[in-house]
Length: 172
Image 1: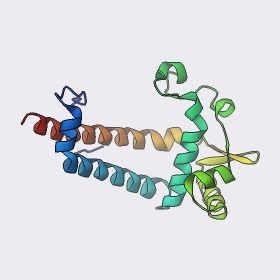
Image 2 (image 1 turned 180 degrees about the vertical axis):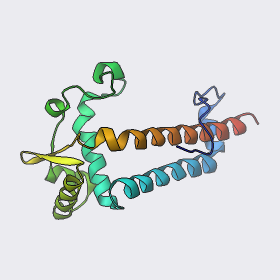
Image 3 (image 1 turned 90 degrees about the horizontal axis):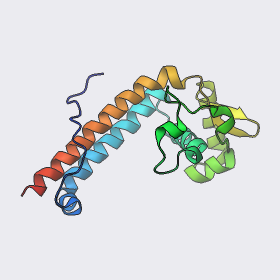
């Protein structure tokens, strides 16, 4: 993994006025945040789903919605994840999603969503669970661990850049 700048770990916010610093650095903070989001979405689409943005959205929603009940806000990772960073008993604890629900959440027509799910299944990212769909663990560990590691590093760099921009205007 080659990044322009490694994260400094300064993502704490010892700013005098976080809201004021944000307001004064809005354009730069917005640019940095948007650059990260666009880069991340394009990397995901290109490297994981052959450039298919709709398939990426469906996969992301399915991945999130199937485990969100296990990870409420403020939950501690140790209460949910094992030593390998995985959900123990995922297959039994995850909540499969119906096509109609995925379609409703993503605003992607059902037939298009069905085709995208079939594509994701052929790529090994999702599988059927009765009438519903569930994230597959077949490719998660091998294909996604390093991709996600790089994504987290890039997120930390972006957070440091936003923090630096906010600190520079806060110091004025």
